[in-house]
Image (cartoon, rainbow, N blue to C red; front, side, top):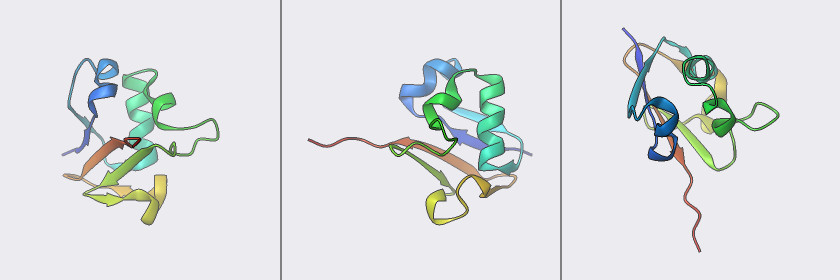
Length: 91
């Protein structure tokens, strides 16, 4: 089994236009590391220089915001769905 990561439209150019990418179970941080291995350059879009999830990027595991869970230590299990949602700036 695997977990699924939903890739937002602006990042699909880095994933060969794949909307859903399967990763091994583990943690959110491990999933991001796996994405970076397969799709170089994606990590810089998701994490800031200190390694934290960027302020304007929201990451959800099964529709729960990881900021209210265990952040990048949030477990990702078989069958889980991770969603990466870029924040939309209003104006």
